[in-house]
Amino acid sequence: MENIQIFLLSMFFAFSLGLALWSMLSLNQEARSGSFESEDLFTEGALFKLFLPYIQTLGRKIESISATEKMRNDILKKLNAGGKADLISPAEFIATQVYCGIGGLLAGLYFDFMLDLGIEIVIGFYLLGFLMPTLSLNDTIKKRQKAIKRVLPYTLDLLTLAVEAGLDFTAALTRIGRKIGDNPLNKEITRLVRDLSMGKSRSQALKDMAVRTGVEELGIIVSALVQADELGASLGPTLRIQSSEMRRKRFDAAEKAAMQAPVKMLFPLIAFIFPIIFLIIFGPIVIQFYYDDPLGN
Image (cartoon, rainbow, N blue to C red; front, side):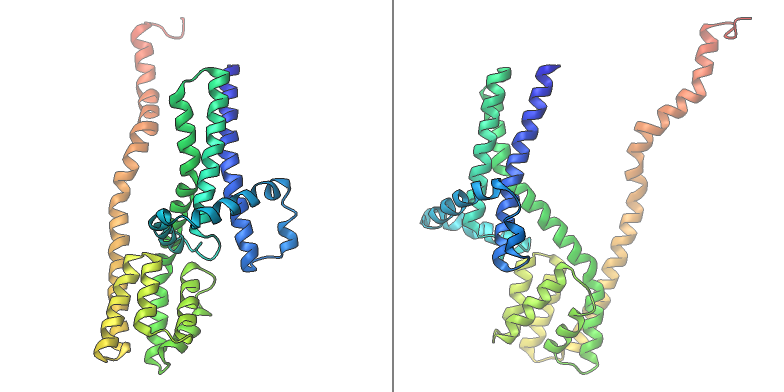
């Protein structure tokens, strides 16, 4: 029992160390972007001051290695999809992976020393620590894309009404940005408006937004808008068609989810509810079968 407790505590230590490194790096980048006051940041504790210089130093060295350029470009795409590109650089993300891997390796060596688990466990803990930032980023990407999909139909309806009412595209984006609240799509619209105001063409700005988010539905809408822009067609009818198509897809998705509900409920019914029902129904029958007089008369 004592060995199991040591093992569980060590796993918790490895996970906490990697999470602390990832959180500290995110706090540092948020401070750079002015998301909150720096004096609040430096009250986070000694761990922040201890690990942050090493992460930044290793990040600069990784950035100077040309062999990591492809890896950094791939990570940059994920950071853009997760909305973290302004908070953390790809090189610093790789540095975080390295240090989290070192933390997992140290935890694995500790387990091996205490419990003699073998080299496989040590390698497993190293991989766990190294992959933890990537797993966290992938989870952030999925949640962000889901949030964008949820608010996209409503935003498209507002954009259609604004354009058909006579507003130009940029002014319509600015207006609906105030209506849809604080969400990932609003941030992407804000960045889109900023790109347009800086002189980037509408087609290129829309394509960049579709690539950043990685949302298929948004990519379809952007393709239709870009095609209409290249052909010189009016955006109002194009947006109206896309809005109707988006509502249809949303209705189909809701209908599909409703049809899948009985199938998803099947496992809980079989695993948890049916055994209890069988026990209640057949329990007394089994008792009476083995005992002629279960009441002892």
